[in-house]
Length: 301
Image (cartoon, helix red, strand yellow):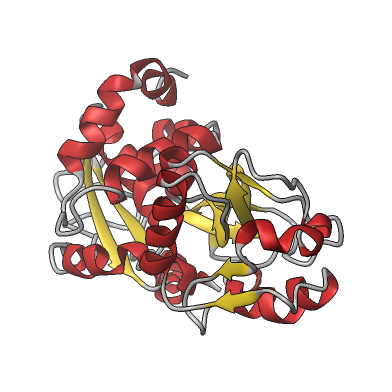
C-alpha cells in the first residue's frame, strides 16, 4: 500500500547511508551508560519510503537535541523497524498505522512494544480535485467527466491506491468511461501542477498526509460508498522499558499531536524542494523556527 510514498524514495535511500549502526552505544539494559549515569542516547527507527514518519522523526530529533538528548535516525523498512523495536535495537518509531496497515506487526510484537497512541488521525487514500471543481463527491464525477477531459490521473501501476481505484472506485461510481492514466507519483504531481496553473479541472489519486495539500489549492471528493477505506491513525511506538529509561521523553511523546495542516506544511518544505537533499536538518529547523509556539508545546509538559 505504501508504494504511494515513492516521492521521497531517492532522498531516503541516500539518507540511509548516513545512519549510524546500532543504538546501544555503551548502555546497559536499564538505559544507563558504563559510568552508571542515565543515558541521553535515543535511536528513532524511520521507515524507508514513508515521508510523514521521516518528517515527524526529524521534528523530534531536533526538539530532543535542543533538550540535551543525542538522537540518531536509523532507516529500515517497516517490518525490520518493528522487529528492531521488539528486540530493543530501536527506542521508538513514529509511523505505526492502525487499524489496518500495520495491524499484523502490532499483533506479532504486541508483548514487546508499547503503543503510545495516535499523533494524527487523518491518514487515508483519496481522489482529489482542484478546489473550484464542479463536483464535491465521487458519486457526481461520472456525470461531470467531460469537465475533467474524461481523465483520472493515477500513480504507479502497482500501488495499493491504484488497485483500490481500479477494483473499487471505478466500478462502484461507474467511472469506466474515464481514461484512468497510471505512470508515477512525480508524473501525477506534474499533471496536477500543470492543470492548476492553466486553470483546468483535474482529478488525481492522492493520499493523506501529502505535501500536495499544502502546495496546491485542492480538495478531496467525498467517498460515500467507502471505496477507499476509512481513515487510519498514525501512532508512536516504543520498545518496552522506554518509559522507565526516558520518562520525560515518554511523557512528551504520549502527548504528541500534529495536525494535518502542520504536517502538510512540514512535508512541503522538506520534499517539494531540491530532490537531492539527504539531510533535512536545516530545512526542518527553519520550519520549527517559523512554528515556534507549536514546537515549544512539544516539550512543555
